[in-house]
Amino acid sequence: MTGIDDTVTEIADEFALLPDWEERISYVIELARGLEALKDAERTEQNRVRGCASQVWLVSRLEKGADGKGVVLFEGESDAMIVRGLIAVLLQLYSGKTPGEILAIDAKNILGQLGLDTHLSQQRSNGLFSMVERIRSDARIFAAAGA
Image (cartoon, rainbow, N blue to C red; front, side, top):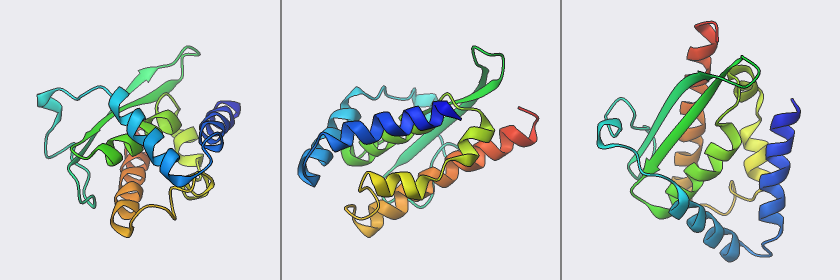
């Protein structure tokens, strides 16, 4: 699973360049600004992530990757900038991976390496892991469908 390792290393390297939490959170907010908005039709109750204090929507779809395997593409949005930035980090980590690769990712460990598990408020941390669980749930559904 070199692709996952490369993605994790890339994200960790980006965070490592930022010496303190304030700079890291500024970076997360910068990532938020680059996240494309969802279409109005995608901001539905079905796509809303439960367990987040902010409004969060995640959309997933299965497509064929370059190697012909099914990969899951994610899009997301939130009404809160920090949460929107956290979505951008999760999309870097998960989007474009096979369902099996997604399910093999140890999100708690990776997010811990980035400091995202200890520097966020309890409410935001719970929301972050609700988003991770939603991503994993979608991957399980695609895997069960034979992707």
